[in-house]
Length: 345
Image 1 (cartoon, rainbow, N blue to C red):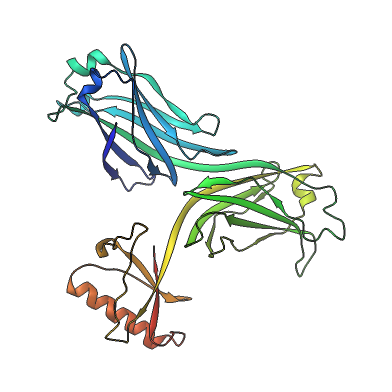
Image 2: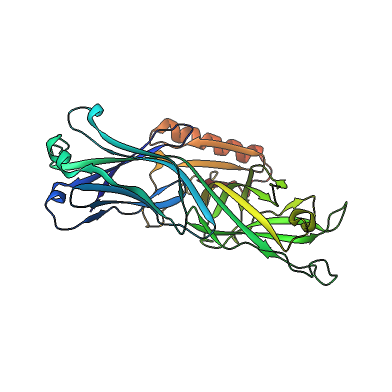
């Protein structure tokens, strides 16, 4: 077993993260040929690392566990065997712009490092184990497919026609895009409405960022869209000032491409701040464990009156949060009986 014991986020513009694995020393003598890690998350996808021992070499591989049809994930990755003497003696290989798909979900190198070098070049740590760092950066996720256009979509009785893409995975949710080719507006009829759907985990709201390109040569580009999806998993429809005939160029299919950037689950709690006897909200995660207050990012407010604060364990931060909530209740006529609605991200 390749044990993941450290994750470091570098907070750079490429969203780089470094995952460090411990490989047991018995790997050199063990008859087992492959050592796997447990699943870990990066770039809103689930991954696993594996280390394969051959007769003379140790190989290192990265696998996309949440690969789905029509989805392409591109990522820069690097495996590094950490040397105990100096970082200049580390053994590293780098792959940039590697493409992971449903058909090709594993990338790596069979000859990462020779077994002889593992012993002779002081890669064994003081604990008797080997350390391997996996660096992931510059991750992108895109779904591209062709959606068939029915022949009778322009008929009078075809007002409720919906064109839908296959389901795809992102952020541990399943998604799809729907096109409604006969959406009327004040100016014209026959416009196309685009709607994003989430098909799993309806127990939370979520905030998602994405963009859509429709048609050949990217005839329509939405730019970055940020939406809040309700408990039903439906986003706000996006109206395109074009017809499905123009987007498909009269063909029987239309190209749809979706670039997914981020998705964040949102939980809500109601805090009665004016009631001194009930001024506490108990929050738990999916494992029924209490949330640590030091790392809670809370946003409270109504419509455009939004305030943000970090809650700490000291008296000053709790006092600041109490004043903030009381001020909001006092100044916002939409406050419900002295209660503040809190979004936990």
